Image (cartoon, rainbow, N blue to C red):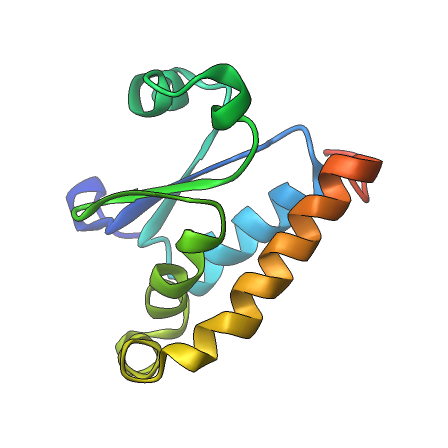
Length: 123
């Protein structure tokens, strides 16, 4: 596991949702822990996201890195590079059409979560 200063980003997610937790743990593992995880309701979440209204804060996942904060479907493109590697990140940057289907899938998953609750219990 890399030292804290080597971590490239932090993903804030809903740790009460089983599907969200699975997604977050997958991101952390695939990124070789370059992406640190923090629950939305944690002290780290409060520090980084406290300026957001509560509804906005808990309405989506958030990614914070050296270039700022991204929310919702906007996290998809940076996560590709962080999890699948620089080459995949460059492909997404070069061919933005690749991001469309990933953003669509994120929006569908999040909309389903908001309408029906989590697909699986946390834990």
